[in-house]
Image (cartoon, rainbow, N blue to C red; front, side):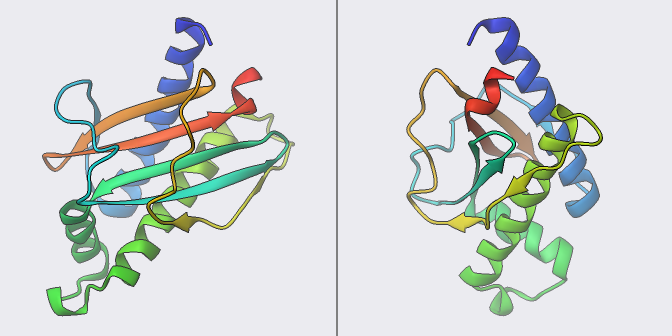
Length: 156
């Protein structure tokens, strides 16, 4: 993928992430190239979702546990003792599902449908990064996070 294509994808993903976080968590988001990337860290939660139709691909979301906990408090108004790992992973999956849907809506013609899988949380949620992968780094509330998109959807 050339730099122009990657820049276009970065913009599409950034717009989708910004809109999702503003609407769901009432948080401003900014793209960043500074700070530590969260990929490969142990104090993060990860989830991924497959795109089945009309092209194949995968989106992954990696957020620090502390940041995900803060979002859960904002959205659900839960006290700390009620915020379990299951609550955090469900929240992470819902955020990623929304981001993936927004990206697909932006790249496809209005009359075309798409099919997404069920978000799958876990340490193995990141595909091997290759030339058909775009990793976008963001910061919100002082916390870094990453969205990774990969697959043949970049050929479109």
